[in-house]
Figure 1 (cartoon, rainbow, N blue to C red):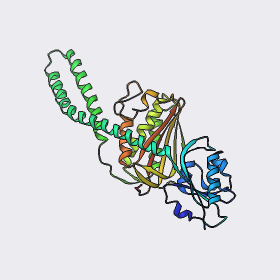
Figure 2 (figure 1 turned 120 degrees about the vertical axis):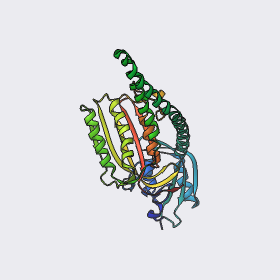
Figure 3 (figure 1 turned 30 degrees about the vertical axis):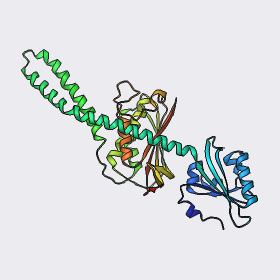
Figure 4 (figure 1 turned 90 degrees about the horizontal axis):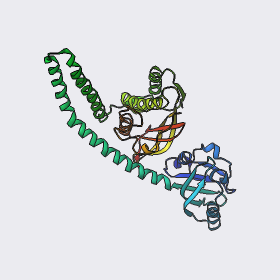
Length: 349
């Protein structure tokens, strides 16, 4: 009998079932996520339509059928119908009852590489944030003394016109205090409770339109998405930081898109989750400069004149505290930030 698909949905490995005619029958949740297709759209289609023409995969199917034994090929490049190229290890196993077909297991190589790179990037970013926080602690106390001294000096000055200079000291000290407070606040422990991510996105939308009246904000929500467990105010801050950056990238006159979907069988911070919320924030601005892309989440790094460079760093801290991740892709005219937040309990892979 073919494997129980309900059981296969618990696997992190992408599994596809094919019939003896080599037409695809169905797939588990991990395969849906990997190939970006619902299992209903796979049913009845020749494997070449989904995975592209691959002599190596055809050989694997031939050998598994002839020998009634599994056959593995490593580093196989699949040119998917979506236009994506995927490098993966593939194991083809015949279903033991004659004539039942095949089980194809896919283990992406580039996904492992991506995970390793993400871990290294997060490690470096965390080290940078800890260094900045340590400096912020050291700087904050002397700033209070400078401000107090400037206020006392202002009261003692014989010429009121000279107060302009002490006022500059006080204003700049306050600005630095706000900057340091922002750096330190991101480290606070979240207070989780059930929240509706669409309610948060609607709040963000209203704030954006109030700040940028000429902005167009488009929505595409998955209404079936369940509530997630999060600190509402902190998650709101993270999404608002990203959305405001998107609006500023268009100078407040372009388009920002807010989109939600469910993501299945995803790995976040080395833990596997059956279901996650995928929040996408996109804009039609000029894109992120190539020179900034590796450092975009570092504190005090900004591609905008006058920007403090804290919005994305704080957003990533907040999302990481919720066991999620932020990713992005960017080109001129299209930048997308992807927030992935777990909806269900995960277990180590």
